[in-house]
Image (cartoon, rainbow, N blue to C red; front, top):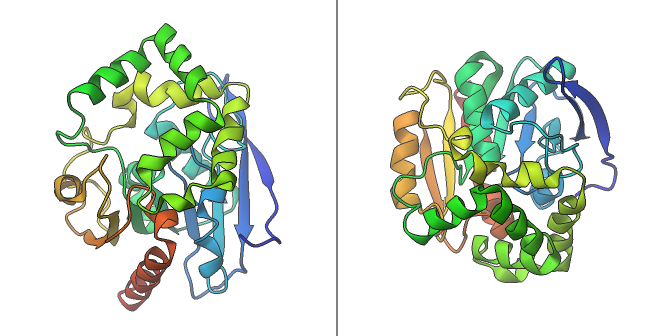
Length: 293
């Protein structure tokens, strides 16, 4: 990531009673011929998880990236976390920066948040580039996986499991299955993912998807959804949690206009796992968006 990027913060009052300090960064210069890019990380991640991607695009595009409320260096209040809350954060950020329209590049939960936002505010989204989005799971969460999430969702056991995983060893064990190229799960990455777990309130945000899984799903959106603009699915072929052959057809019911690209030798964290192939694909997508504008 460019050394010139610095942490910026804004205070977001998202209800009459609740507010949170949100971290974001900016890269590149305003280009009137290019739509700004907004990068949105996945569950448990942060701006730095895009450190192999953003520099490839900052010479042509103005780029924004932010930590979702409850994650990274953003504040972690005791509130009800959901895709709706994250979409409201996207809307607040666009208002803050006076952005009429953006191209959203989102990963996993961040991609799902982008879809939720685009459904409700389609006029604000130029295009969606979705890396292994979550929110639709088909029949992939079965057996012991459902049992595990049921346990995490129970307050006492969930807190015990959080304590067990909220350390570098637990983080390493959690990250390894999301990478095909597991050498990328190094000390630097583990440290990036471990530090926010020590923040006040991390327990509330990190356990929220398992305590209230329906708040993080897209099943209730109309199919097709309200967003009719360009959309692209970029998937790691080796994603065992969200296998592309099962999940892509579901997303294409939601976004029938979405093209799908499967990258071999990449798992769930495709943008970091296979960053060169991912960046090349995104460059081609951005060119397509400009050609059809």
